Image (cartoon, rainbow, N blue to C red; front, side):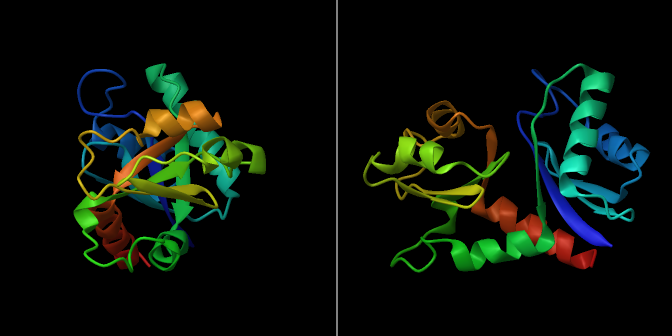
Amino acid sequence: MQTYISFLRGVNMTGHNSIKMADLSALYISLGLKDAETYIQSGNVIFSDPGNRHVSVIVTDIEQAILERYNYIIPVMIRTNQELIDLFSSNPFLGESNFDPAKMAVLFLHEKPSDSQIQKVADIDYPPDKFKVICREVFVYCPNGFGRTKLYTNFFEKKMGIFGTARNWKTITTILKIAEKKI
């Protein structure tokens, strides 16, 4: 049985796209997914699929269930436990001197961008902030913090024409610890 982590774009407890995390867990269970556990109030769900469905089927099922139950169009990005582990070896900024994990985030993309989508951001440079697109993730490092960076989720979505949602490095590390307990 595979352990997955889903990252929902734009879900929170209050305001726009409000879904209680307990209700979100229950929705996953109603879809036949097991051990659905949320982390913080922003649509992070760790779960297992006993049916071994293809990830694209699970994504479609979750997005459709949210649309039917809440009337929200919410992009869902799913990664396996191993894909989260692999972020540590593929992160181009971890080895930098004075690396501060509090200044690091990963934007999880809904699908793998095409070469032409990647080219749309390839020459963009906003020092000291930097980013690197690797597979279905955009690694973003802002040494002065995220308060004034131009490298935010909407920036990449508009430039590349692809949905995504960002999580900071601490959140990713904590979610991975939760997921590893489920294995």
